[in-house]
Amino acid sequence: MSERTDQLKSLLQNGQIDRAIEIVQSVDDYHDGESNVFTVLGEEKSTPELVEAVLESFLSTKPDHAGGRMSGGGHGGWVHSLSHFTGILWERRMDKWIKKFNEVSLKGANELGDTNCSDRLVGDFGQYAKFDDDPAEFSLTFNNLRWMDWKYAAYSKARVEAGPFASEEEFLRWKLHRPETHIAFDFDAQTDLINIKGIRALVQKLQELGADTSEFNGLERSLLTRRLGELEEKLPAVTQDWERERLEKGIQKTRAALSSAQ
Amino acid sequence: MAKVLFIDDRLGEVIRQWELSGCASNHELLTLEPFDSIERTCQMVDTLKPDVVLVGYGLGKSNITGADVVRSLLQGGYTGHVIANSGGGTEQFNRAAVTVGGTANRNHCDLKMVVDNLTKGDG
Image (cartoon, rainbow over all chains, first blue to last red; front, top):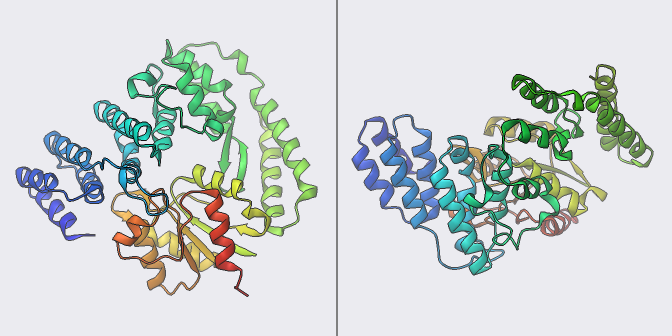
């Protein structure tokens, strides 16, 4: 941990907010800016003024030139740094700052041709957006995202296309129909398995809203049956022991889930 | 065949990078789990004995970076290959005065190239 980080933490813990604001405003570059953001957002004693100052300061460190593909730096390096803490901004729903950072990042991506890590900002929207969030208000329009490779961001693309939903119920039903919701990487089996926990959580939320969930009866069983078939089909072609072990574990877990499926 | 371990918090990106790279045809992907702590990482390296460790820079934890992980691995005596796997290339590792053996840049082509090149001479 750097001396500056230690100094900033000490000032915060001693309630010396004005001095802390001076420190964060004297940042050299976005690397220091990122470090300051983490320090400020991570300290309970940070005040709203200090949080504004540190984010404003990070914004001011954005380079006006594109970075190098191998060397990094530039606009894309700044967006990469930004992407390290956007999750915190979303979790705290600091919408003003998310919108500002998205606007600036995507403007640079389009004008400078440096799209490094801008896809992460799109993924953030997919992950965190509430039902009534309008992607356009977060600068996520298809015109701004012409550079985006959507092949591996199908859920985010669909979420941007869908725009704001009229209700939480409508959003939850939409999510339950999305194939990306049905699958999750299982860390025990080290392979993609049906996301039973996630599916049940969404159905429960619908039920808590008083919504009819009968259209999802049998969804688990149907998905598990299909996935079991896919996994079993792969098994004969596997040559490595470590792959076989993981696949067999996935099959075992899927069979177990099927026996208790709703 | 090399045993490859990813140290990262964005496992969706890592899985995609691995699947697209074609590395699975001649290398083994060791257990994936979201970055938790330097201690857990060192434990995984001791247990799994990877030939190659790919390290992201931002790991989703306040004040722990990939540079910190690399330092700890090297101080702990790890002698395998350490590769940066960051959207910022090696920039932040260099700034932190940490030397890595290559960079995969979160890119599937770079991943295959660097893992193959670093391990082709290994026994």
